[in-house]
Image (cartoon, rainbow, N blue to C red; front, top):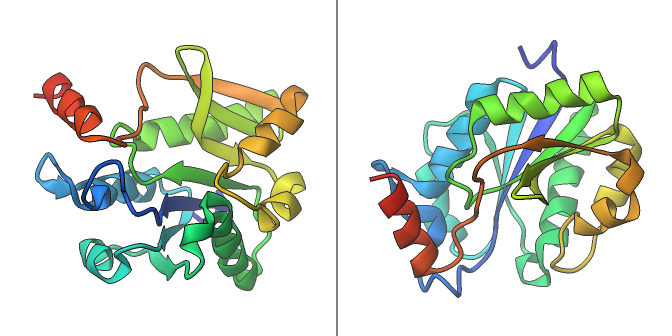
Length: 200
């Protein structure tokens, strides 16, 4: 299906998880590491090639990707922030040289990402004709976010830790949204404990 739906999925997982106190990418969720769960959802969407961007604890976390048909890339400048990870992913995507209809940016610490939600982002881009399609929970825009080709140059030049948030702020008229009940990320032990309680 990737040939018919030429998208790339970037899963950002380079952070040091300082607030969690341990690599959150490896937290067990239903018997699997958190990051592997998110990456599997991206693969199940069958939208295109999946790029996983690692940084801190890269070698340990890379092991959790074994057997998955993804491109794992280590961002050596991960301490600069999320913008550097997106730049790193875009450089890898550019080497592929395929003409893409969009790049989907997801976070590796959102355990409730599903293949169905990612597919809805693509369907909304096609029906709404907008160049950005963001997820929306409780009225707040958040990743995963789909960016059309008009934004690729900006993604290649992102700086700082805000990631692609600046693109959302700069292009409010170009945004469509897909509502979801919950796509929260896990940043702290309380976040993780709350997620486990809700999904016991």
